[in-house]
Length: 367
Image (cartoon, rainbow, N blue to C red; front, side, top):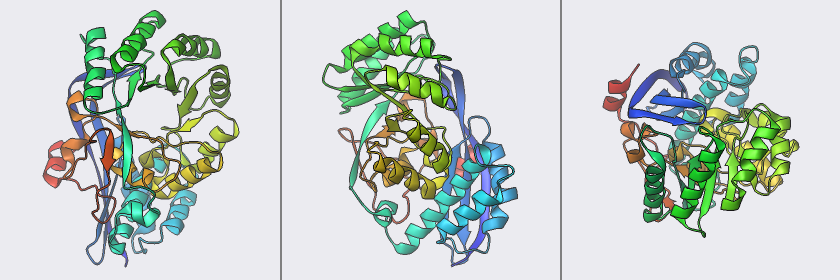
């Protein structure tokens, strides 16, 4: 089996109206899309969220990485990962290039599982046939207000979720405390509340003051209270709270996660397979976390992450966004979108990672 072709391009799917979190306003969701095809016609797909740079990631795949893997055996995932990572040392290690590696590596594992005739999670070890999902939301939108937040949280409960997540940090601390109070009241005292600040606070005083103000509403974790590279600050905040700090959605490769764990900066890790280096590196990170008894709650991309979480023993939750919340829009290009039932997602049994993309839809949104 040999790789015959690598195709990469970018798409951008507009949201109906802008949505915001603590540090950014989003009007569209762009993704880099990668297809890897073999000589026998097997096709694997990978992708990553671009945050405005999807076309740059796609160009990195085609101009730098594709020549490294074409003609190679796609089942040699460990060797090819190392060659791509080491072969881009001068321009990579993090950021765009590792996202590009993630796309190719994920496509290779798709091919590998299809060649084996089994779903990816079975190929990786098979720990569970279903995974728990939390409803992710609580974004800021013009005119939404507290009543809108309450209604959203109640909707997630009505859909069977015992775990929900909300954004914090965009408004004044007093307003944010009220938002957290409303969310807790909406979901009740016995469900799990998660919060995400997207790196909002710039120093220990700001972060700890804010996070302690939320404590009476019993949050399970605060995600990214500070910027991802501020390891000392991460650790200081984590040590100052009676509940967990979570992070890692913007961390690249095992070395970055080794730093997070060594510094005791987080108590829940959130690797994203489309960011960290693909399936190969995601599994390494999850196994390393298991050595420290740290749970894994991956960021976004539930269609891929269900396969990975179902393959490990220290999986916590899948992050899930309902399409009608109009925050994530990737369902618009999927052949088989998944949806939780009573807070659980059943693993598809199709060979590969289970994600198939609609080519007509991709062409409609192509950049």
